[in-house]
Every structure is written in C-alpha cells, then in structure tokens.
Image (cartoon, rainbow, N blue to C red; front, side, top):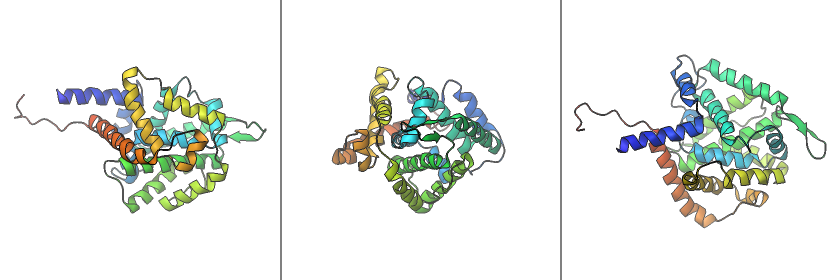
Amino acid sequence: MISSARSRLGEALFHRVAGPDGERHRERIHGREGPRWFPPGSPIAEVHGDASMFVGGMRALLLQTLHPAAMRAVSEHSGYRGDMWGRLHRTSRFLAVTTFGHEEDAQQAVDVVRSIHERVRGEMPDGTPYAASDPHLLRWVQVAEADSFLRAHTVYGRAPLDQDGRDTYVAQSALVAERLGATDVPHSEADLRDALADYRPELHGTPEAREAVRHLLLTPPLPLPARAPYGVLAAAAVGLMPAWTRPHLRLPWLPLAERTVVRGLGAAATGTIRWAMTPPPPRRADATP
C-alpha cells in the first residue's frame, strides 16, 4: 500500500513538473546512449536532480524579477500569467536535457533557446532598448539561478556539497550559460557572490516584478488541496531570499520563524517529494505479499 501511494504521488509530481509528454522526454533524456556534457554523479547532476530544486526554482524566479530589463522581457514576451505550468515544463525540460541528456540533444536545446532569445526585444519605459540575447542579461539569469539552486541545495538537499563541490557546480552550470551567450560568468562560489553584488545597483522592485511575485506566491493555478504544500515550498523559497530583496518585492522578513518553523516545514516537504520521486528498492522474490 505504501509503495503504491509513493508511486502515485511520484507520478503526480513528475507530470506536474514535466508536463503531459514528460514520460516521452524522460525516456529520450535518460535512455539515449552516448556522451553527456556532465558525468553521472557530478555536482550539477546532484543539485539539479534533487528535490530541493522545487524550492530553488521558485527562489530563482523571485530573484530574477529584481532586474527591470529581465522582468520586462518576461512580462511582455512570456505567457507566465496564463501558462505558468507550460513555462515550468519547458524550463524543467531544458535543465534536464542539458544536465542529463545526450550532448547532441543538449546542444539542440541550447540552440532553440538562443533562437527564441533573438526574437525577444523591446523597450524600457524610458525608451532604452532591451534584448533577451544581451550577454549581460543572460549573465544575470545565470547568477540568479546558480545562486538559488545552490543555496536551496545547501539548505534542503539530500547531501549538501562541500566547498569543492559547490565551486564545481558553479563552473559546470556556467558552461551551459556560456553556450547560451552569457559572458564573464562566475566559475566559483566566491565569484558567484561577487557577481550578485555587482548587480545590486541595477536591481529594484517594479510594478511588473511585484505583480509577478503575487502571481507566483498567491495565485498558483492549483486545486485547493495542493495549495497548502505549495505554500510551504513558497515560504521556504522566500525564506532563502536575501534580506535586502524583501522591501523591493514587498516580501515579509521573519528571521526567527524562517530559521525554525519555515525550515522545518521546508525540510519535511522536500523530504516527502524526494521520497515520492525516488523509485522504491526492488522487492525480494521471497518477500511476503
């Protein structure tokens, strides 16, 4: 009975994140033989394959909204308001194929994203042009994602990485960002902290950013029974946001509760997800039914 419940929950989570055709893509990503960009068990595989990504992904979205040009590009060219899950499916598939897939499939995924970026252009309210292919904006997306994924894995991961592992993770994720067109990408955890500090003068909350945050945190397209677990993951993501970001996005800052209650609930939630999405060990032939 427990095994059946675990299987049902795991499949439900997988289809929510990967989409209705997720099974087909999973078979292609993991089943095709041949060279990969990263070896199995490497830091990038450990981080991107862990349940902590549920928290890290949400934290990355929150952090990315703070760059006005990046947020305007998302607001004007992304269907996040009406197609939140479709965007999640595409993002999770890109991370999966570039981390775990055959090198040809990984490069094809990068080429597709680069072609999309070339068409995402517009103007800021003051008339300044922006382009999704701008290496500086691509660097910001990489900094926000790498910092968020690594931070979430350090707090909620099954087996947090040591310093060498964290530095290797940043360097490995930089390879994908550079193939997407980013330049001057950090290759160590220290470089990552410095890069985040470099962007501070450019970051601030905008009406578009606060709308996106409200949509992400308060109105997810989920049935009522799923709202409470989602709220726990959202609280865990907010709890990992730097204190200086909170006023910009009108997020609460409750340091004591975040270090105790929120982290406890977040650990329980990611632990449950990890349990559900890990295949149970094969049953012994002589086991009692």
